[in-house]
Every structure is written in structure tokens, then in C-alpha cells.
Length: 354
Ligand SMILES: N[C@@H](CCC(=O)N[C@@H](CS)C(=O)NCC(=O)O)C(=O)O
Image (cartoon, rainbow, N blue to C red; front, top):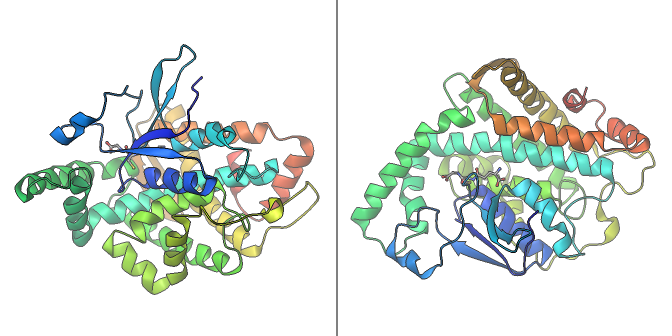
């Protein structure tokens, strides 16, 4: 068990979509925080002013610092479970819908954003020359503003090489590139339509899934030139939405601002059902194929997604994501289960649980 103190302390960088997800969420929730700048590899002398912190089990950004039962400081990562753990830091402005059926829809959308949209984010950033150039220029500067151009040129090149080599982890390769891009365009068109009738994914108040989508879009809409151009031309509303999400500290909500309140039979707007259908079309088969590969102890996923071949190395963390979603589904009571099934009917989301 880890407990957190206010102000919440975490380390992150502006280029990390998950750091941005957490920053925006904490601003919206009005939870005081301190963002400790920099990377784990605190090589610059400038970082000597920061005290040594513990390392997390799997070192990822953002890294949060809390205390364990013995009162010892520990470092933890992973935005999705952390968001649920810090819900209780403030009684107000929860980002988890109170109806469990809508809560599970939120979790599915959050996972899709964190684990599938990030494929597009990584793919655009490290495949196209202008994007590779810009990221190589900026990423090392973000945690060392005063470094010389020579040092930065060298660091930039190291980062480019390291990240391009990592494309295989997210599954961006010559077989999957077209599917990743087509799927991103479908997402863009669908969220654009939805935001035309509803300011957030699940109503008039933001949920954790909004911040997950926002995190990925801080890269694609606000930073990386190739997807940014695409988004500005094709869906300017989505670009504007990304900027709005950054700071919702003054946005006021009402408890009944969720799309669904109460377990009575209600419908989601068609625009959201279409978005869920897209999740069912691309991400559900991916998660299932990943689980199948890992269960068969295969290192590679080979499957068909949206009618096209898909090939990448299997990813144990995403198997854990599937188990979390299944656990949440299992915890639904009868009436909530019926409601969930009815809300996602017409999509392939239920394949995750059957
Ligand atoms: N599931 C994690 C993902 C975090 C993650 O992948 N962070 C990236 C940066 S955006 C990272 O630290 N990558 C390794 C590195 O930069 O060395 C979360 O939601 O926090």
C-alpha cells in the first residue's frame, strides 16, 4: 500500500503524454502538486539541487512519490491505477463516473487511449523526418535549457536513435504503418463528431479517459508537425479541445453531468457508440491477439486488424491491462452488467469479456 501526501510530488517531462495526462487531471481536480523536472538519468549538474529519490520497479515517466506502510518513501508509476488511488485525495471533481457501467466504459476508453492511440503518437513522431528532427531538438532541451548546442545535438541524436529502435515495441513497422494511420484518422473523425455534441467523452464533465486521450493529443495535435497538420486541417475542433483540456481548473461541473446517471435503461449518444465501435474494431482484437500470443508463449503477435495483417512483438503489460478490464467487468452486479451490455451493444467491446 502506498499513500500520498499533498502536494503530490512526481517527476515528469513535457514530452511525455502520460505526464501531461496527469498534470491536466490534477489541475482539473484542484489537487496541489509539484512536478519535479527532468529524467531519471539525472546527469546534468543542474539536477544536483534535487534530493535523491527512490527508483520505481519499472522506471517510467511520470514517476510518483508516496510512502509505504512503514513510512518509507517509495516511487510508483502507471497513470491508470494511480488515478484510482488518488481519487480519495479530494472528495470533489472525481474523474471516475459513479455508475459502474459507465465507469467500465471509461476504463475501456482510457486503456484504448493509453495503449492504442500511443501507437499513432509514437509512429508519427519517429517515422517522419520533420517530426524526428523536431523531437530530437526539443526532447533533450526540456530538461536542460542551458546546455550548449553541441551537447544538445549529440543528446538529440542519441534520443532519436534510441526511440526509433523502440518503434518495434509499440508495433509500428512496415506491416502495421497503414493500419495505424487509418485507425488514427477514424478516431479523429469520430471524436470530432462526438465533441460537436458533447464537450467531453462521457458528458459535460471530464473523465480519466478524456485526460488519457488529451495526453496523446498533446503530442499529436500540439507538437509533432505531421499529425498536427493533419488534425488542424481535418479536425480543428479536436486541436482546440486539446488546448482546453490542459487547464480545466476553473471549469465548473454538476454531479449529473455524466451521460448516464442511475441504472435505468439509457442510451449513449450515437457518436459515442461509434467511437466505442472503433475501439471494438481495432483495439479489442489487438488485446485478444496479444493475450493469445502470450498464453501460447509466443514472442510475436500475428493477426488481422481491421482487415489488414498485424505483426508485432507481444506485450506483457497490455495483458495486465486486459486483466484489469476483466476484473472490473467481473465486479459489476447483475443490473450493472445488463446496463453495460446494452450500452455497448452494436460494438465488439463485449468480446473482451466473453
Ligand atoms: N502505463 C504508463 C506508461 C508510462 C510511459 O510509457 N512513459 C514513458 C514516457 S511517456 C516512459 O517513461 N518511457 C521510458 C523512457 O522514456 O525511458 C503510464 O500510464 O504512466
